[in-house]
Length: 128
Ligand code: HEM
Image (cartoon, rainbow, N blue to C red; front, side, top):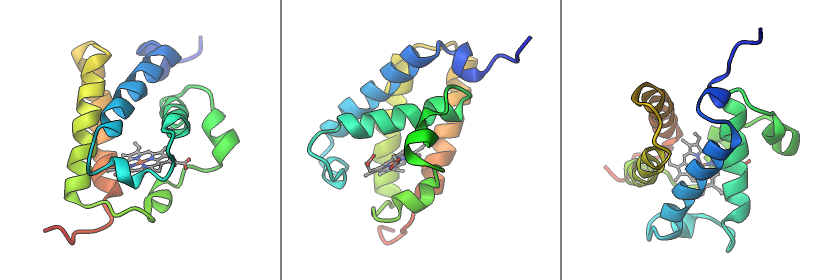
């Protein structure tokens, strides 16, 4: 019996699609974060984030087939991510996690990772 992945446990691809779509709805309306996204269309960025998170949690490895090794800190180096950007990002992600209405233990597992990852992505402290 294959071990059940967290990806499968929380509902597989549809859950991740809903989560990230909700997150990017917030980004699209955010005056601080929206200008950081280089493309006019947030669709491709939505797809990259969705595929990354699915892969991270044990789903298909399409992200790496398309993008290679994640190396997320390196990929974020061109963007100025201070505490304000991190907290804005986490605010949208918090609403997105709430929107998929997972059981509390699963929501906490997902949130703990996203919060730690967001702190890890900070690359400037010039704000403070
Ligand atoms: C890409 C901002 C945190 C995952 C990007 C992009 C921006 C950005 C502007 C470029 C858009 C694109 O080309 O996809 C931020 C900010 C963060 C943050 C302001 C605040 C802390 C995170 C975290 C994760 C993450 C915590 C993972 C849990 C990704 C992924 C991509 C991406 C997977 C696409 C990488 C690629 O394949 O090129 N981010 N990000 N980001 N971000 Fe973030």
